[in-house]
Length: 110
Length: 110
Image (cartoon, rainbow over all chains, first blue to last red; front, side, top):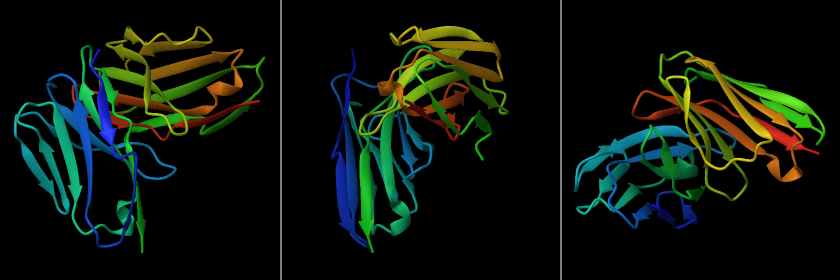
């Protein structure tokens, strides 16, 4: 079946540095979603990408969907301590289900 | 508040106990989900209900039994659990798109 690998598993940055997490699939994805989970919290939806090559921005966050729709990235410019958490990608399968990647835990040192 | 509530928020149970987790969504969504989140593991999809019918069961042990009496309520009945079942159990709902997660139930099996 489809597998989505997310890298890195963990990233520690100094506040103000940039951060990127990648999702890579072995097969073409119909869409991809990104979620953020704060420590002790629950996943919260950030964005959904559907089109090949799509790029969307939310303030300091930039989301990309690859041309072949097999990979996606989330880039954070000038990280802040409020960015701490685990970032998950997820792709939509049949019957409304969503398959999540392994997640990237971001730690930001002030 | 995401419109998805879960009770209890914390649960400690012995291996011979029977307990139930409850999830309620106030968003009018037609699909509901149970996920298991263990330390250092990705979110594991357990069950999917769409229009109150179970449409996905990811080979979850029979000691976990879901129930969806209507589109707003979802239960997870637990019996004779094992210590390795200790985890955060998350409920989510969706309407063919982003998923809204509840705060989760932190379960500890002694």
